[in-house]
Image (cartoon, rainbow, N blue to C red; front, top):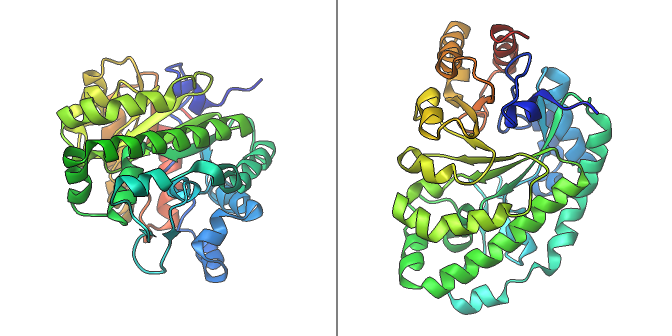
Amino acid sequence: MTVSHLVQAARRKPTPYTPVWLMRQAGRYLKEYRELRERYSFLELCKNKELIVEISLLPLKKFPLDGVIVFSDLLMCLEALGLNVVYPEEGGPKVLNPINSLEDVERLSNFKAYETLAPLTEAIKTLKKEIPPQVALIGFVGAPFTLCCYAIEGRGSEGFLKTKRLMREAEEVFHKLMGKLTQVCKLFLEEQVKAGCEVVQVFDTWVGVLGPLDYEKKILPYMKKLVEGVENVPIINFSTSTCGFLELISEVGDVIGVDWRIEIGKAWERIGYRKAIQGNLDPSVLLAPKEVIKEQVKSILDSVSGRAGHIFNLGHGILPDTPEENVGFLVDLVHSLTGG
C-alpha cells in the first residue's frame, strides 16, 4: 500500500521532498470555482456530493499538490446541532439563532448530524477512488472553541467579548455548549476517517483570542476529548495567534500548524521536535512578485533545516486575489528546493 509523502511527513518520517498543500486551495482564487459560485450558492456547494468532489479536485488538476482537502465548511457542525447558519453573498457566515442561555444549549441536538454528513462522506469515498495514492486525502473539522465563538456571537468578531463573558460568567452554559460541540465535532472527524480520509486537520482559528490560563483550564480538556481514540490517522492541530502558548497547543495532535507570526524553526524547537510541524507562509506573500515569494519560501525552508516532519503550507487560507500562477510557482519551488 502506497503511503503518501504528506502522511509520511506527518509521522516525522523522511520524504523525497517537502510535501505541500494549502488551506483554501479550492477557493475563490480559482476561475472554475468562481464560475460555480455564479451558478450555485455556497451552501448548495457544501451539500452536493458531485460538487464537493469537483471542487476538491480543482487545485489538483492545476498544481502538483501532495494533499487534497475535501471541500466543506467548518460551520456544518453547527447546522448539524440545529443552529440556523446562513451564508450571505457579502460578508462572512451568520448564525441566526445564536446561543444566549442554558435553554438555548439544551435545545441543541445532533439528530441531524448524519443527514448533514451524508454528502460529505459520500464525496470522500468518491475522492478516495479518484486521487492518486501518493496524494493524501485530508478531512477537517472546526475546533470546539472556534465553533463556540460562532454559536455565541452569531458571526466573526473582533475580540469575541460575548464569548469570553459567557465563559467566565455563565460557566455551566459554556461547558454544556463546549461538551455538545465536542461531541458533534468528534462525530464529524471520525466519520470522515471512516469514509477514507488519511489526515484530518482541526481548525482552531479563533482560539488565539484567549490567554494560556483560559486555554489550559477551559479549552484543552475538550481538545483532548475531540481526538481521543483517533489513532490511525495523523491529526493536524492548526491555530492562529497562539505563539504565547504554543507548548499547550502542541499537547493535541500529531502535527502542529502555525501561522506566520513566529519563525517556524523556533516554533518547532519550542515544542521539542516531538511533533511534526506545518506552515507557515503569510498568504499575502502570494500577491507579491516571484522573487519575493522565493525569498520567503527559502527562509521557511532554511528555518526547518531539512528536518523530517515539515509540511509546507500557508499560515492561513489563500487570499481570493491570489494569482493562480503564483500558487503553481510556490508548489514547484518548494518541491525543487527540497529535492523534488
